Length: 270
Image 1 (cartoon, one colour):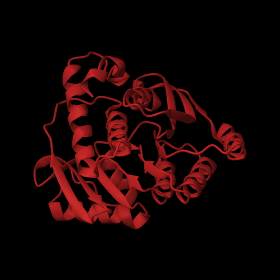
Image 2 (tube, one colour):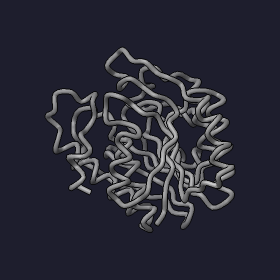
Image 3 (cartoon, helix red, strand yellow):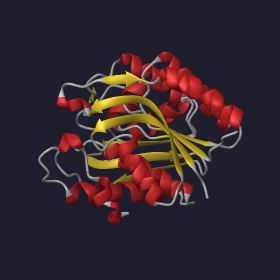
Image 4 (cartoon, rainbow, N blue to C red):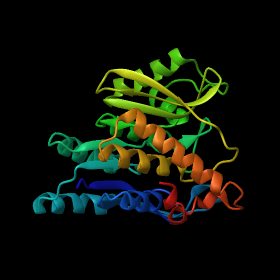
C-alpha cells in the first residue's frame, strides 16, 4: 500500500490545504502523513488572518525522519513561506526522488489573473524552486503564467499557446505538467503533458459560477489518489475534474464560500 507525505499549510478555519486533502486521500485508502509549512488562522479572503511560519519545525523534523529511516512513496508540496523552507523541502524532495519517491508540486499562489491575499512575488520565486524538483506539477492558469513569466490573457489562449505553456513548465524542471482553470480556444479546459508517453492532452469541463476555496486541493487529492492507485494521468485528471464539479454543484448555493466545501459530507462522490 502506497503512502504519501503532504507538505502544506494547515488552516484553522476553512476546508483548504491539508484539511481538504487528508479526508480524501484517507478515504481512497492511502496512508497519509503531514509536515505543516505554516499554521494559518483562516482562509485569506476573509481579509484578516494570522500565519505562523513553521520553518524551524521543518528544519528540526527532517533530520529526525532521516535518522529514523522514514520513507514515502510520494510527496505532495503546497504553499511555501520562506527561502529556507523552500530550500529544505526542495532538497528533501530531490533526495527522496532519487530513491524512487514521486514528487507532486501544487504551486498554490493565485487565481483569476492575480495572486492570493498575502502572497507576493517572493512566493512565486520559491514555487519555481519547488517545480524544479517535481515529477508532476499542476498549477492553475494564473499560477502557470506567474511561474513562466507568461502574460495572463483574460480571453484565454489557443491550443498551441497551451502546449507552449506546458513546455515552459517542463523547462523549469517538472517532468509532467497539468494546467487547470484554463480557457482554450474559447472552451473551459484542463490541459496536460505526460512525459511517460510524450503526449499532450486537453479535457473540457462545464463551469459553475462562483469562487469556492479549496477546490484546487480537492483536485490535487483526487488526482494523486488515482495516480497512486495505478490510473493513467489523463484518466486521473478527468476523475479529479468530475469530482470537483460534483462537489461544487452540491454546495453551489452555500452562503460562505470562503470556508470551502465540507469534504467529509462529499466523500460519497468519490
